[in-house]
Length: 339
Ligand code: NAD
Ligand code: WQD
Image (cartoon, rainbow, N blue to C red):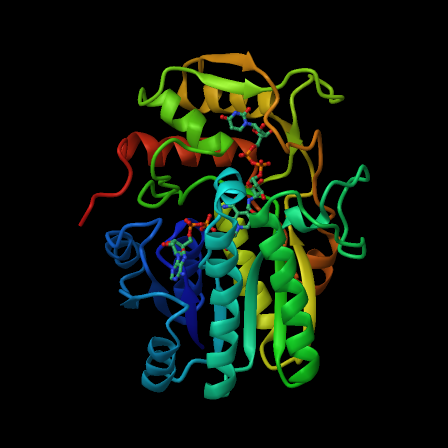
């Protein structure tokens, strides 16, 4: 299948391109490089022997999308392109709603013009909002997330459901990721945040490699076994494989499908720090700091539905996530090269 991958140069998109190529698919990428570097393409080629066609552009550019759909017989679209920094979105809601919602709608409209009917969307566990019930299961009601970022994901999910109802020959998969971490086992691809990392695993990795002095653990008085927050960390290659499985399931099976992509169990911040210390062979310095606004104490996925319907389940564990992150970070201490 020819698959248009928006945001395919980014963290999850690049790993998904590799897994798609290995499964016999042909990705075509559009990415505006606002949070990634084009040198990722060489790494995809190194790993697969195939360099995807790449359009350096914005998903809000309808004319460019028309050109891409005219130049390639695209069967399906996987839509990763978005802004994703939760804290930044609170200060820049307009940018987030414009990029994420306007971007998604422009893309779906171009698909309609081109007659492309299969769409897979990068959603997030954030759409469950603040609910004291775990694990989160797809049958639960969604709740308005506290950040504009999270809200943009919920709004897009709702728009897509309405659009699919009005265009009943469309297939839409809403994939709700929990906490994707880790890197390709080769050490050639991984997460390369620009500036100070917002997320736990890349911050730990940068401390371990000497780019930062000490990890601040946000809160140690949560109602969890060790007082630090509990999350469902999932290896990025398992997330990528979830997309391949979803593509096989939904393509040409009209409807809207919702799947959690999580490992199905939770680890605390201290569990992750300890596992990473084991992986890199040295202690990761940390200090306890006040809670971070907006953090929930504990949640993880019920991933039964994806297992039953997609035949997908995670293959990699927390030790793999840490070992692969460390291999990537130690082989590429400054991330991807500029060119
Ligand atoms: P990322 O920032 O590494 O990748 C996103 C890519 O999209 C980047 O390469 C960026 O340059 C590109 N992009 C952004 N806006 C664009 C636009 N308007 N036009 C074209 N390209 C654009 O992020 P990621 O971690 O790979 O996340 C991918 C998707 O998964 C996002 O939609 C994100 O919201 C979602 N998601 C991520 C996580 C996570 O923890 N990483 C969790 C849940 C959901
Ligand atoms: C994990 C835990 C922090 C950094 C975010 C988004 C979510 C989804 C996945 C996109 C928390 C703690 C972190 C640090 C720390 N993304 N932490 N020190 O917040 O669970 O989820 O990414 O959709 O929507 O909110 O992930 O990695 O930021 O935090 O103690 O320097 O690590 O408090 O408990 P989070 P995270």
